[in-house]
Image (tube, rainbow, N blue to C red; front, side):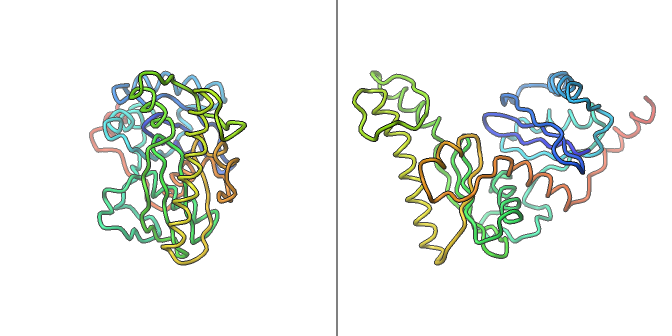
Length: 269
C-alpha cells in the first residue's frame, strides 16, 4: 500500500492507495508545528476505523507547498511506517518537460496537477486549482508544463475585504440568486462569486488566445464544483487530481531507501 500525503497551505490530505484504488482519504488542518507523533496518533485511529494497519504501508510519497511541515511528515513516514518517503521535486522523473525559467521554483502541487491532468484528459490543457491560491496551469499536447497564473484564493479575498473595510462583515462564499445585491451581504456575495467567475473566464480566454488553439479545461480543489456551476468554460471536474499526481509520480520513480542509521535501529527493535 502507498501512503500519499498532500500538504497544502490550509489542509494536509492523507490517503492510502492499493491496486484496488483509494482505501481512505482524510484531512487535517495544516500546522507546521504539529509533530510526527501527533500525526501518527490521529492517522493510526483513522486507519483502524478503515480496517487498515500501519504495517501494510510499503511506500510513501509527499507533496508539500509548506516547507516547514516537511520535517515532521518525513519523520512520520520513517518512525511510524518504516519507509523513506519520496518527496515531489522538480528534479524527479515527471515524464514531461518543465518549460519555465526556474523549474525549482514551481510548486509541487502544480506539477502534480499537470501530470495527472494530462494522463486523464490529454492536452493541450488548462488545470484550474481552487485552493488557498487559485492557480491556472498550462500543459501542451505532449504533456510539457508551460507555466501558468497564480491568483489570490476566494477565501483570502473574502478575508481581506472584511479586514480592510470596517463596515463589511465576514461572509461565506455561495452562488447568489441575482447579480444585483439589494443589501450589503448579497452585494458582497455577488461581487465575490460573479467577480471570480469573471476572473476565471477572462483568464481562460486570454490563456487560450496566447496559446493559439483550443484547450481543455479541468478544475480541481474544494471550491471547484461551486464555480463550475457558474461557467461553461470548465469542462471537467477532478477532485482528487493532486492525489492522483502523487500516486503517478511514485509509480514513475524508485522508492528511496531509509537512512542507514534508521535501518540499523529498525533491525534491532
